[in-house]
Image (cartoon, rainbow, N blue to C red):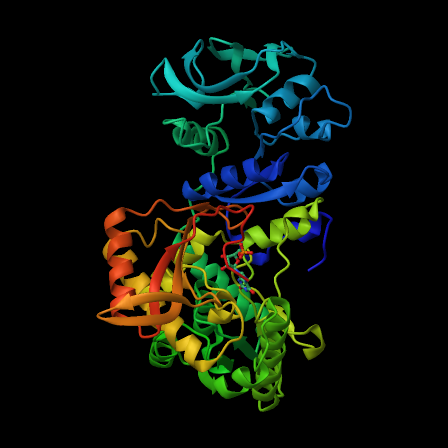
Length: 525
Ligand code: XMP
């Protein structure tokens, strides 16, 4: 994958099978949300950098183009612009918020710096018939979030809706197929927003709603078959959602040519190794190799307390074990990787500040000389889950919370011994059970136990104890870049405390981590 440049955003050939709407990116978060909403309407959408030449956009034969919102004003020096050729290309365009202001600004209308923004819910009044608002009530609530204000539409446009602080809240030139809305149809705070988007997709652009789980699977399977041909493929299977769904897709495409390697580090959660084995051995035509390497990992971790050294020791051991298995499959030419669409967007984005730099276990070295097969490269996380369900993977895998590659080791502060892993694993099972019982599993981004390196005094029965505490860590998050500590109900905390202390030998105290990210990270190391 090359960083930067329009090609970094390209997914793979599965897009050719679908009517496509391109979302031009003027602010990554806005663009991603729009792209997801379009796909929820079963139309394939892809995010493209605003610097992409119009000729390249048109090469993709898009049915429509959406200009996303963004944080800037069209009046600040260096404000992002777009090649005006896009407005004369004969492809319908919908500008949203900044996208609408840009369209107005570049086509000769007026975007005023009124000094008075409009934020939050506001009533939108439809002034003239428009395909975007067909069948929708007027007024309807919409969500606004803008500083500048469109005060005059460009020539040939008509104003189709207004709001108290936005005289031009929607405008269109149906002859050229150009539309703009000042509000955000993509956010949940605009209750009928998805219908506005659908009207654009189906009435204006004439899209066919072909992007469904079954068609995504079919197209991915074909793309993998075309890429791999008759060659052999390796896959490092971790038991997480992404690697499991990627493996399942490749198995469906070229099962007998695939070897899945599950490296058992001894640092997994309770029952995880067994579950991966049961799931994939039963269901796959691929060979599944279960590399039981716990001894080697504990050897590498002997006396290692520093978090970075721990991660490095685990990462290196992982690579060595994987290479040994790979040595038995020297004819393999491909390696499966569970790269998702947000990773593709982030690695192509001009500002790299948001990219994670984890020492990821499973980050196998380029020297292995294997070509990557990335069947999830076009998919958002919720689509990966939907595909996983459709492929028949068990709910526990499809809905599993993220788990770090180095496993329980980064939740054990200080040295990692078998005994300490056992304590943490036993506490972790209880956390998982109680969170599930409370129905909070999917609401929380992650919920788990941490084992610090201190011991504290307690009293159990008539005995003085001197044992470890367990810390409960539970967070909500959208993407792990930021997170908030979860307000767990007291009853859940009470059950966790009492069960962990009663059931886990070596623990005499339970504490709760109430740190958000930033300043804390989600994991403790
Ligand atoms: P932090 O602790 O940095 O974690 O807030 C953010 C998210 O990344 C996960 N994480 C990892 N995932 N390999 C992974 O695949 C790793 O080495 C790793 N370290 C942290 C963490 O669980 C959280 O979801």
